[in-house]
Amino acid sequence: MEQQFWFKSWELEGSYTSFHRRDIHPYALKHLPPTDLIGKTVFVPLCGKTLDMLYFSKYANRVVGIEIVEKAVLQFFDENQLPYRKIGNRYVCGNMTIICDDLFELSRQDPDLRHVDIVYDRASLVALPYDMRMQYLRKMEELTPVGALYFLNTLEYSPTLSTPPFSITPLETQSYFLNYHIEHVEQPILPNHGMVRKFNLDYLIEHGYVMQKLYDTYSVEWLVASEVTD
Image (cartoon, rainbow, N blue to C red; front, side):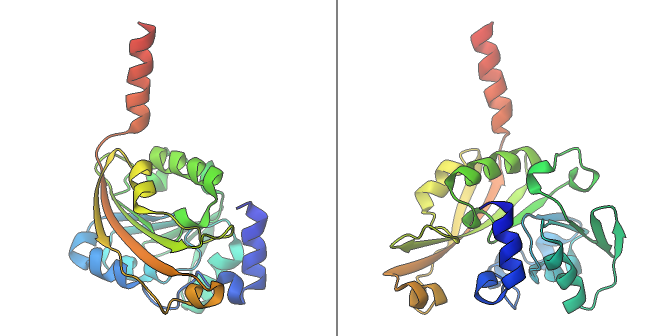
């Protein structure tokens, strides 16, 4: 969605920020245990004020989030009673840094993103309509190094909605991450999910994927292009 959509959502709050959980997501606890976090840098795109960052910060070497809405960033530190230093557009507390900026303006040359080991995407991909989703995937491809672990959480439901969170099927996910080894680790049907009641959905499945990046797609594209021109 356009940036203004998210500024408005955080301004209105309530049901407009129902994507924010008041607990640590059980998938994070189950599939990113402390032993997998020790010594690692975790990148959380479109992080909002997720409590998952608090969990990661207990065990990981560094946690880096990016969030365009400053209100969400300030609430994260205030609600969790965390002191912070503001350095430019970065809010720093211990081993946590939240960059208050547009994700699409980042590059892998950013000092905070040079050594990303784990990407945690709980509600980012599903937040974006198709065209922006493609843009997001290209940016994440650029930011994520080969070998990185990528945890992805998506929703699949019917009938589909024209507003976020959007429904994404496993086949779609596979098509988005062709250069990854993908393990489909979670797919429970949730008949009591709030969206089922609110929108009278036929079903809703919450998918979880643990993926590892095998190669850069832009490198392959460059090689193919160079072979064509030779």
